[in-house]
Length: 93
Image 1 (cartoon, rainbow, N blue to C red):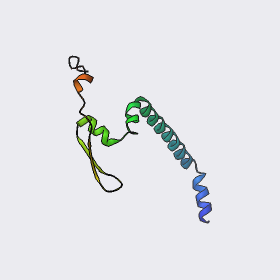
Image 2: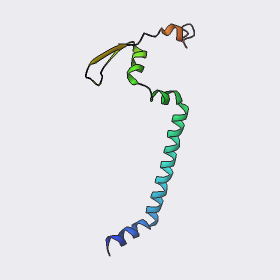
Image 3: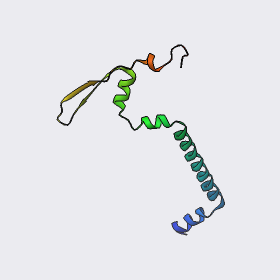
Image 4: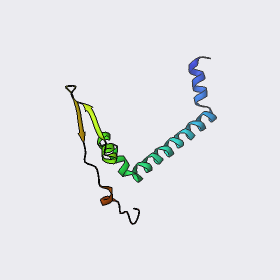
């Protein structure tokens, strides 16, 4: 009995087919969970497409440094956000 026959015997066995079916169900379930997570957190998903340096600066008021193509160090600062204008402090929202 060669390797091909052993493979076909294993592949056609009922326990192996049940395992494959369970794996397929698990993968579909996992894909649905990922899709639901993306749909319910659409704002966070949109953030992934933005510049992380600028996002950090907007939240912290920090300074970002990077090298451009001519190896010149560039510093830029984004103005600090006035959170009291955005967040209603009396409500805590």
